[in-house]
Image (tube, rainbow, N blue to C red; front, side):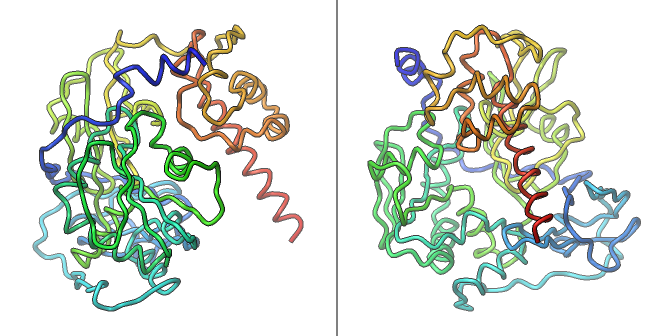
Length: 402
């Protein structure tokens, strides 16, 4: 446990930054790249189609996944099985607009409201939980992400709308807002609980244990503050969800931005004044749980929480084929009490059944295993690969047995 104590006492794993600046509006997009994998295009949406803000482009068959809308005036330049590409154009001559809907006044609840939010672009997977107690996770999700504090203290109208809508979605008997210790906020009819803001307590399952004192208690669910903000954005504007809040940062610069869905990361880094140099690594998401990107034309999705540049030389590079040295550091820090070194080796050699037997699907994806790995192995990435393959196998068996 010594290794775990050292990690959690490291000041870089604190999740508060005394951030008081309001969110900055991101740039008007020149191009967007929207993820349409597994979406069904709406009739008439094709190459050279002129689009306008909020225009429905594609629907998703799952109730959990929000439908896809254009975030701007533009023209579709390409559509493939993974993406829709749009170039910005002058709005003159583009007909059509989306009329705002007062979803708060309509009074819909439960499944009816979930469907409406899905149709307005909100990812509802974590929002429709039927639980007795719902915990709103008010901590920054990763070290380096800084939007939680201003979201709690300066976006009250947005959060009030999001919380009100979520009450109707989940119909929980008891709602608890978990905030960093020392923060003073209040919301009507909601209990506020203060927790020590140390990573990985911002992982939902660990926050639930922190608040209730129990692991996986029955009838208790958690939802991230980012999801509540997205819900509230729709409630306040009455328009489909077309943007997200992200922290854009490097070692020397960081700020929180409201950016359009599909924004190219190259344009965002330029707007934030962050210059890339040879050997720098770009991470979409948090520094620990995010994914590395290899191109500047990759884009931001509605669920993205951060965009970070890890400067060359600041951390040792990971070696994909570096062998595990059995030091046990990853086992000591794993909050799920798994053996990441064993799981990563099974995954490396495609032994996914062994990963399942070793409970790889219980991984919380906190990223601490890869952070402490002396051999610089991509431990979390191996486990994510294994769990994706396990899901594919299970879906195949289910289809075969239908």
